[in-house]
Length: 178
Image (cartoon, rainbow, N blue to C red):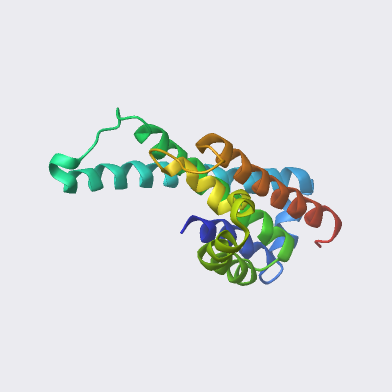
């Protein structure tokens, strides 16, 4: 699960004073923060794209005569979008981990939120749930997305959530840490 990777990539900085060592090596907090998030983003994008294309191609191999190719409408978009979506979710988790200083806490919040709360709120609140980060970003995965939020708009909504978490994490690193 890619959000776990975003959280676990950042959380070791807060274990046993490792952040002090990192900031001693790179005293400019903005540079340290940008480099850390860039590494998380690059790794998540590579893994996300590889996973998306591999699972699509393997899944299609099992469908036999019902299989579709990457040339079908929405198929390539779904594969590329899946990699981007997973990257954005990893960045959301990384930003929250910088803010909360704990991968356990972040994952304790994100996993139930993504797996349970989003669907419960979706059933109760209807249209507002379409703008939650997981539901909005997942629109890119459907060959024919349903609802008010389109595939690329959904990724943009998820990107805004990730940007908000990253900004909050950056502010925390600048103001509070070490």
